[in-house]
Every structure is written in C-alpha cells, then in structure tokens.
Picture 1 (cartoon, rainbow, N blue to C red):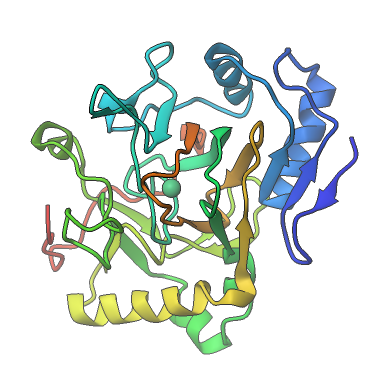
Picture 2: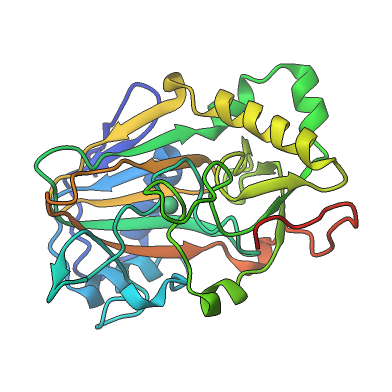
Length: 297
Ligand SMILES: [Fe+2]
C-alpha cells in the first residue's frame, strides 16, 4: 500500500485501498498500522453503501451509535448523518456538529478509539476538519507542567466548555431532555497513555472537560484553558479538505479535532461511524471527589 503524508508532521493517505469488499487479515493489519502511525488516515476514492461502510468500520472495533438518534442513517443506526441539507423543510442530518476542539465520546466512560467519516458531498468552499496533535503537545510541555498534571483526573460531560449557549453554532449539538438524561458525569486522566501505542498524550483538554477532581472549579478551568491554548496552536494543527469519496479515520486518543463552519446554503453531507475503545482498556475512574459540583447538567 502506497502511503503519502498529509503534512510534514502527521497524517497519511492512500489511493491503494478499496474497503467496499472484505479485506484479508494481513491487508487490514497494514491499514490499521498506517492509521495508528498517521493518527489521521485517509482512504481516497471509495464508493460505499451504508452496509459496506459499517462492515469496514467494525474491523477497527465496536461502533457506538451517537446519542443524537434523530439523525441516525435509516439503513444502519451506527451511521450518524452530518448534513446541512433539508428535505420537506426538515434537516436530514446534524449541521454544524463539533465546531470546537474536542475528542469524540470523551463524555462517555468508554471513549472513541476512532471516528470515520465517509464524504458523500463536499461544499464549494470550506468544510475542513482541523486536527491537533496531542502527542506533540504533551511532549513539548515543560517538566514542571508534566509533573503537575501527571496525577490529575478531569471531569467530563457532554458539551463544549467554551460555549454553553445551545443557540450558538459553535455549541455542542443540543440534546433533547431524554438524551440529556442519558449523559453521565465521567472522569478520565488528563494525560493518557495511548491504549495501542502507549505514547502519552494530552486528553480532551478542550471540549467536554469541565473540571479536575479535587481542584477548585476556577483553578481547574484556568488550567484546562491554559493546556487547551497550548495544545491547539497552529504548529500542532493539520487542516484537512475533503474530496467526495474520502474515508477519513482519526485517532481520538492522540488528537483533538474541530469542524469548521460552512455556508448553510452550500450543501455538504458526510456519514460518520464512531468506534469505541475496547472496554478492557478502560482507564476511567468511577468515583468522583466530593469537591466537584457538576455545572450545566
Ligand atoms: Fe467530533
């Protein structure tokens, strides 16, 4: 399989794969190695049915349907439709999803290993996804900061710490009261050893993290904000422009990512499948310190 770099620091793509058909064990292993090495891995020129997309995604791990169930694909609920198109005046998918740096499912106890997007329709302008390399962001921290954050455990819940107003286009996509009721408070270490590569990375310092166990809320948010500002500097960021037929897979344990806003009148559609980490790799703690008072939930 020929691989080309997406940037001079991370990201790989290939023209050589066809994932519409079942891959041999050896072929899939090669592809999986490229994915973990690249952190963002792009398979170009794919033509997939919903069933073929999900069958391929399942090779990487168990899919977890998104809490926003009104935009599940009618053929397979493992697919979430991301789209600004409307049919009979009603949206067919989730528009403006995740337009702030975050990592997928960090608000769940078993977070996402990988997110896969299949590009069905690209806008005339924009629509890039930004990826920020959290291995590099961690590596570049000073020793004092590394020691300070090594034992810290962050508190997460669904949402965007920087934008609580549901009406904003950069807020987390709003949940119904029923969906909100399903969302627990979760903890994850601030620095995680990657479950596959073992490399340390900053984890979800932007997005769904709202506090740190045992730390006053203002101090915790200031530290998370400081780390997020460091971790999303342009030197860590790759901006990916989609083509129709791309399958883009990213590693949620070593990246933050952000969608970018597009013109609502400029059609774009992506299908998304999110793959959970294997549950045996659980590193979330189940008990919250009594000092933490949950915020917006
Ligand atoms: Fe996301």
